[in-house]
Structure formats: structure tokens, C-alpha cells
Length: 178
Image (tube, rainbow, N blue to C red):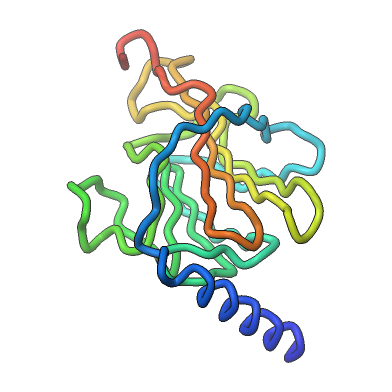
């Protein structure tokens, strides 16, 4: 409704005004926080799987990223999240025009497998105004890989901030994919 839209626009303006000076200045730092399993957890949502597939996902709160405030994102099985539209599926040296505003926690030619719970999952944890929205790629294989050679990783968005964390549970494909 219109009241929600007004609130959203005010919220985004306040967040953007607060972070606009730092929007281009994301920094990398070690994260000692534990991995949060999502797939198969009560309250989680299975988004989907496949090869070279993208899904539109609506986070439960506006996500602040790269001088924007977003109520939707495109999540790809190839290990990326794009904001403000879609992007190409091919890999290229960054920065590139196919990338746009996007996050690349594990950008490669990935695909879901026949392993149970393989796929992209989401969950929201905590209570407003300090919730976390988690997008997880669980038991994802490299395209053409041997069965059982999978990785698991996630991106966590923190409500009301521009803090974004990448967390990795398993990033070694093993076998012929090392």
C-alpha cells in the first residue's frame, strides 16, 4: 500500500544518507563469526537450483548496497547476487559491464547436484530492527564435476546497515576439482 511505500522511501533515504559517504568504501576483514546452516533448517525457504539459473528474491527488509537501497535481488546458481537487474552468466575480469551492482561470494560455473538439500536457500534470523537475511548455496557442485565434490557458502545481510558478510563452510571441491 501507499503508506508502506512512503515508509520504505523514507527508510531508504535515511539509510542512504547515513552511508552514502562510505558506499564505495567497503573493506575486507576477517570474520570470526560461525557459519549459520540454512538448508533444512526450520523457517528456511528453498529458492531453487539448476545450472545457469537465476531467481528473484525479496529480502524481508531493504538491503543497502553500492549507493542503492533494494527490495529485491537476483540470486544465481553460479554464486552471485545482483541488484537492480540481471547480469550475464559468464565470468569476466572485474570490473566489467556485465557485472553491475553485484556480490560474488563464489563466482564460477556452478550447478546444484543430486545430493539431498543441494540448492539455494534463504532464512531470516533475529527480530527487527536487527535481523539478518541469509542466502546460502548448499552443496553446490562445479559444472561437469564428479559427484560429491561440492561447496557450501552464504551471504549475510544485516538489517539497517550496509554490513554484508560472506561466510564459507566448505570451499574445496576435492578430487579432480582441487
